[in-house]
Image (cartoon, rainbow, N blue to C red):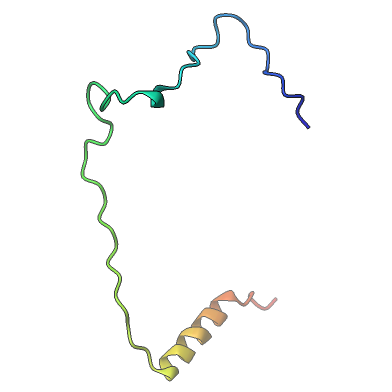
Length: 71
């Protein structure tokens, strides 16, 4: 349980100003943005029709991967 007190900090080690920068819109940061390369593509999603027999085969494959080796 916390007492609600701020942790004591040695003078000179706390570099934060205490101001909230979100109170004023100052635009984008000066200089170069960190994201300078192309961002990765989003994956394509498509619906696939699966027959009941194909579904059972997928389930069996999944179950066979989860079983611990005999020993």
